[in-house]
Image (cartoon, rainbow, N blue to C red):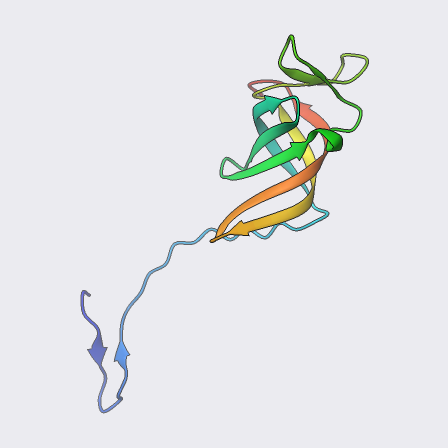
Length: 117
């Protein structure tokens, strides 16, 4: 229906409404997966569930060092490489809500998938 309706002598207008919503309730210290979409010497940017932005600041990339030649973060053995496309897990430390747009800050936990996996 395009219009509201009055039922009997009730002074209220009744309107049928449909709502489509995504409910997501992440909070510290929850661990989430994120796909790396940006790598810099000062942070790693992530996309969580293909929808929410997250970042891990350089001091929170524990055990990793930035490799400028490869634009990636690596551990000392070279076994863990974090570059654009890598799937990582991170622990939420802060949730930001700017006018209903959520974003996260966190601490690196581990890399769980290579680029494209």
